[in-house]
Image 1 (cartoon, rainbow, N blue to C red):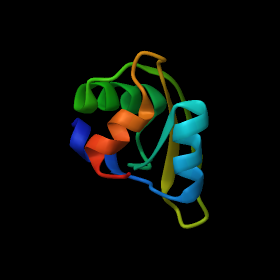
Image 2 (image 1 turned 135 degrees about the horizontal axis):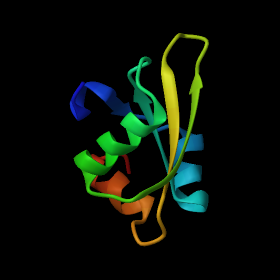
Image 3 (image 1 turned 30 degrees about the horizontal axis):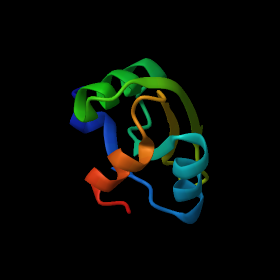
Length: 86
C-alpha cells in the first residue's frame, strides 16, 4: 500500500482541535488494515513531519481512527493550517 491509500482524511472535530492546541496531536481516519508502523511511515512521507507516537482505535462505525503525537519541533497547528482544518 502507498501512503495515499493508508491515510484517508484528517478529523476536524472540537476534540481534535483541542488536542492540537494542548497536546500537539493530530487525528486521522486511516485504512483499517494498516498497522502503526505503516501509518507512521505514511504520515512522515506525506507531510514531512516527525511522529513521536501513534494511538489507534476502531470506532463502532468500523473506521480506524489514529491520534498522532508530533515532535515538539513540528507544531500540529501549523500542519492543520496547511491541511485547511483551521
